Amino acid sequence: VVHDRMPDDVTGYQVLTIERQGSSLLLKCVLTVAEDRMEQPVMLHTGYHGALILGTEALEAHGLAGRLDTLGVEVLTDAQGNELRNLRTRIPEFQLGEATFHDVPASTMDARSNFPMSVLGNEITRRFNWLLDLEQDVLYLRPNRNFDAPWPAHE
Image (cartoon, rainbow, N blue to C red; front, side, top):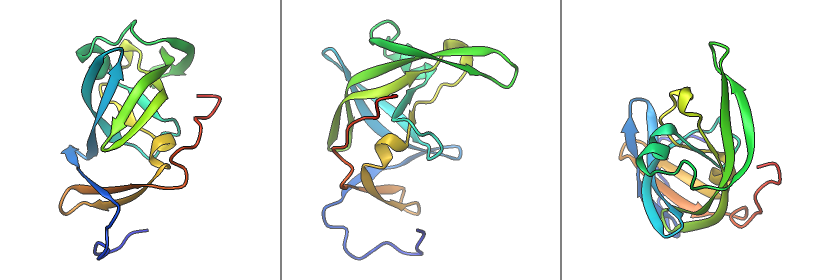
């Protein structure tokens, strides 16, 4: 639902800053692997059904290749017909604002994909009520009834 103004009462919502990169909206999150806490921007992407994609930039910057347990492989084909092998894995801890999730299903992009950005998908976004104030570049976020839902078995 789109409105021309924000609601008067935003009680119970936490406020996060939105960063823009081109036409993409980015939020800062924190990944924890072993004892390492890593700040990582994630792009809001309502077209991705999963929880999280770690782009090639995050994998390289944080040295995550080989540090995450592999749960399986997804084979995708790019526009040129090249096969890309994305690993299905889990992030031990993922934090978005004040919300923390454990064992978050994630895909890691094949280095050949040239897909640098990490993506926040619908499996996480559906767990919140969202108010986007794009004039102020602010997101108001509040957990909803889906917040504690289990991760899908196929993830």
